Length: 118
Image (cartoon, rainbow, N blue to C red):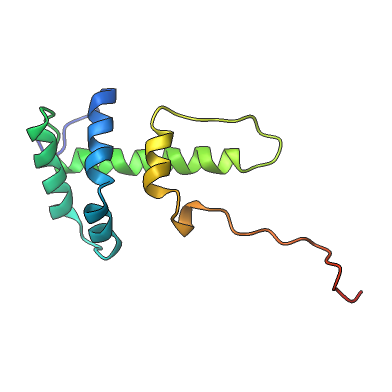
């Protein structure tokens, strides 16, 4: 079951995955861990306990895909003039990743300040 082809994830599966992956303990381990296969193996095992059979690699790839989609939507929404975009798991992802510096745009500075000497 290591590397099956593409298979559709149900909303319930994705929600379960995000719930497990978004746990504070898991997130803390991910922050300091470059090689995280064992962590995704644990997530895969826990998914199985909830009735969802997914390999660690499928879980890792799905999270990578969700993070990419989340960042894309967040960047789109932060651009002036764009209509608001979203995707089904945006709120869950925002709850997990919203405070990370890599997911927040840098602060913008005004090009002219009152105290600037021109």
